[in-house]
Image 1 (cartoon, rainbow, N blue to C red):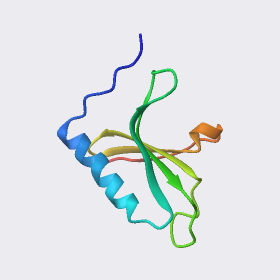
Image 2 (spheres, rainbow, N blue to C red):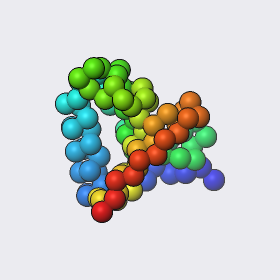
Image 3 (cartoon, rainbow, N blue to C red):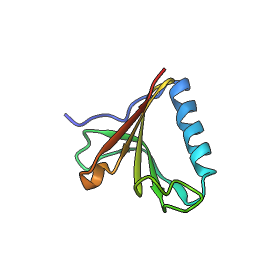
Image 4 (cartoon, rainbow, N blue to C red):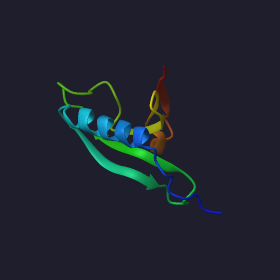
Amino acid sequence: MPAQRSEHSGAGRALEDLICYVTGLIPGVAITHRNELNAFDTEEIDVAIWNDGAADGLFFLPNIILVECKNWFDIEWEAGKSTGSTRNCAIED
């Protein structure tokens, strides 16, 4: 059975909005997708970020950054998932 697009709580939606706002301020970084299902409709990506690697931006991170907002205080960044070279960095309370 295909996954359904999740219903986000008000706090979860606010966290996504905050992540999009803050990352949008970083040079060379752009939000490309929000709340998108993968090709098999089995997983949802909360925020997809494209990173040009600008010298005054996130040059130390890969081009594709996927953000999963699990709850208000738990964010999982999955960098390079689509290339098979996943690096995880979780921010938790």
